[in-house]
Length: 507
Image (cartoon, rainbow, N blue to C red; front, side, top):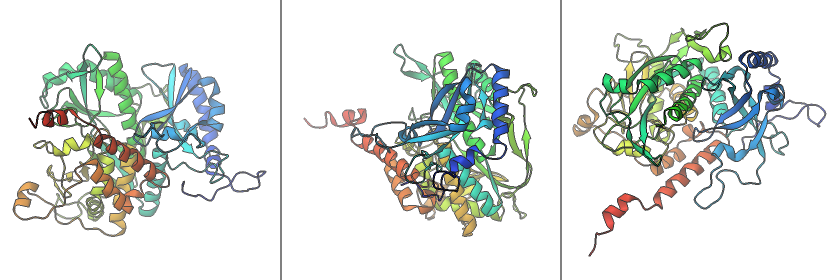
C-alpha cells in the first residue's frame, strides 16, 4: 500500500489541509514559471509537448499534448494508469506487473523549469513530471506517488540535506556500444574495432558522437571528454557532475539522445551491459562527493543566452563550496572523516546496492567474465580497480558495481541511504586496500563477495532495510516484483548454451 501521508483536499470537500498535489501546483513562483514556459513556446515555435517520467526500470514514459493546452495541463496534469510505472508489462503468467486493470490512474504534473526543446525536431519540447496518487483515491488522495523514482530521489535528497547539511554531487561514466544492423535490422557487430583509447577507432565514430555532443549541449549537458573503450563500437562520453537529481535526469536524457542519433544513422545504440563476452562490458561508474555550501551557475554551452532552447534551469550546475571528501590529514590518499563514514556506509550495503546497480540478468555476465576489472568484492582502496569502491582522486570516490542498464534515480537514492547510514552511525570502512584484491585474499584477507546473480542480489536487497528505504511505499514491492519475474523468466528459459551443452551428452 502507498505510504500514508496525512493530507486532505481543499475546503469544500470536508477537509481543510491541501493535498501534496495542490501544494505542488500552487507552490510559490510556479505560476510565473508556467507563464515563462508559454513565452518559450511562442518564441521557439513549439507545437507539441512530451510529458515524461521514469519507470521502475529507468525507461522514459509519459504522454504527448499539443502546446495549445499547456496552461490547462500545467494546472490539472494528465492521467495514466498506475501500471505505466512498470512499463505496462505482463509477468510470465500473463498478469500485469505491479497494478491490475482495476487500479486507479496516477496524475502527472509537469515541472515548468524542465521545459526543453528537442534539437532534432524543434517543433517539440519535453518536460519532466512529478507523479501523484489520483485525486479521487479513497486512501491518500493526491499524495505523492511512491512509484515515482524521480520524485522519490528528490524527497530523499531533500531529507539528506536537512539531516546532514550536505548535497550529493555526482557524475557518471555512461559506456555504451554503437552496433551495426544486418539486413533484418538485428545487431551485426560493433561499428568499430575493440581498441581502447585508439583515436582512429574514435575517429571512425566521429559523425555519430559529434551529433550526440551537439544535441547534448543544446539540452544542457556540459560535455567534457570522451574516448573509445575496449569493446566493439564502445564509446564513453562524459558530462560535468552536478546535483544528484539533475545528473540522473541528464543521464536519462543522454540515453534518449543516443537513441535518436542511432535512428538518424541507421545503427543501434546499445546500453545492454554485456552484449559480448571476452571484451569489456558497458559499465556506468558513479563518481561521488558530498558538498557543503556552494552556488548555482548557469552555463549557456554555446547557446544564445538571450534565446536558450529551454528554461534556464536546465543549464544550471552546482559549483563551489566545501568538498567534505577532501583529505583532512597529511595523507592525500585518505578521504576526510565524512568521506570515510560515507565509504563505510556504502561498503556495508554493497550487497543490497548491487540489486539496483546491476539490475538485469545480463549484468552478472560482467561480474563473471574474468580479466576486465569488473568489481566483485566489497572493499575499497585508492585508485584500486580490483575493489568495488575506489577513491578515484582526492575529493571523490567511484562506485563501480553499476552498469549501463541502471535506473539512475534509484541508484542515487540508494547511495544516499547508504551514506546516510554511514554518517549517522559513524561506520568505519576499515583500512584502504592497496594490494590487488586477489593477492590480498591469497595472503589470507577475508573479503566478502558481491552477489553474483540477480537472484542473489534481490535476496540481499530483501534483507537490507537501509537500501530498501531508498524505495519507499510502493516502490520496493514494485521493483522486487518486476525483477523477480525477470529472474524467473531466465530460469525457465532454454538457452543456446543448454542446447550446445546437453543435446548430445548421451548416446
